[in-house]
Image 1 (tube, rainbow, N blue to C red):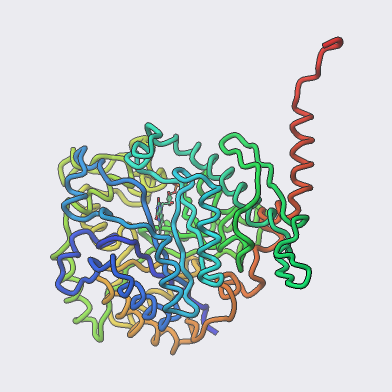
Image 2 (image 1 turned 45 degrees about the vertical axis):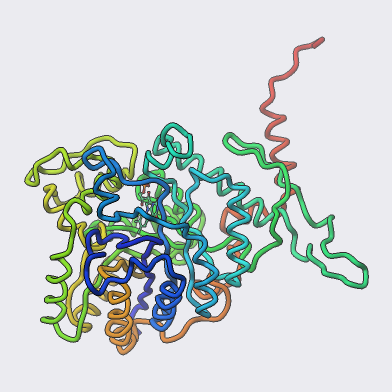
Length: 474
Ligand SMILES: Cc1cc2nc3c(=O)[nH]c(=O)nc-3n(C[C@H](O)[C@H](O)[C@H](O)COP(=O)(O)O)c2cc1C
């Protein structure tokens, strides 16, 4: 049997997402992002195509690195205006039965205590179909508007993220025992207080002494997504993520990444096959090669050069507006996405500014595959076979056309080849993906926090042991 390929849709609660300028295409409907009907229609299309999920990216902040200004970001709607992603979870769940809903939220800007309740609420409302894409953020403008002065250093952001998820694991996994909610009318006991625990967290960055406010949701900890690609980012992803996103411009970059991350997952004591890796692509397809190519040429004529470099500058932290189009991108130490700078200035290809603008104009830093359904299916199968990636995180050129084309052309072709699912598995998102139970498996670090009273005793002993001995007579 052919190796199974998984699809995930990559979107954002904004206009044009990663295809700057294509909002002006007459068929693009992304300007309707403010309407719930628009999201529900899209979700139904994706569910028809048995996509694992729709993944809603998010940034707090705006792209003001290019030419030192946010003018082009605002003019070209480059991820501004952008609405809150978590509020899409419930309406999408109401319109669908199976589709996973991955929501991005940053560990840099919101306190874990309030975020834990927002996430549990979404897991309740979706009956366990929500996932959390854990990001650490890269836009200085976001940090400044939250009153932090500026972003923490890149590696320190991952240190904060590690403590952030620990607080969440304590709240989701440890605070409320199984069976705490009794709803016992005869004994007039709704919740048994002896089964609800304070988490007693006192760390370097956060202090959360008390109880989780929500009762346990269907998955307790929602499915964890992550996209770390720097050294500390990959270590974090390997330790925590159940689904990993990667943006690799070429097959060789992807192959190297997948091998590296699977090795790190095994080193973290987890099963590398039980973590799904999705690589970013955009697919432009039609009934024939000629029609697909024509569509691509049409789309390209709408790309905004400044909009594309606005994203590239924001992701890398390098102002590409200060160079000529023929200049070659050089490695500069920045505080934005380290791995992105490594790809474009240290990978197996050197990039001019113009090439970067053209490449990133449709679908960001993933490749664009153009062709008939047979040709695209060949390419997807080849990428999966050659790189060991599990599936594709699919960005759009224009929406919903790009997704409808995939559901109409590519999915049936892959199904015909036995390389794509024909139905969803039952249960929560975690069960649909991995088939085991609704909760994180026992070899996941969250498991360490299920017996929260034991955790508190352990932590108290560690603190006692690290205290200086009192001098005699003190
Ligand atoms: C497909 C994909 C989607 C991403 N989505 C977001 C996002 O929505 N918000 C965000 O702040 N970062 C996002 N990132 C950036 C990652 O969180 C991370 O910073 C990046 O992959 C680089 O890793 P590094 O920080 O370890 O260098 C995304 C990355 C990829 C590959």
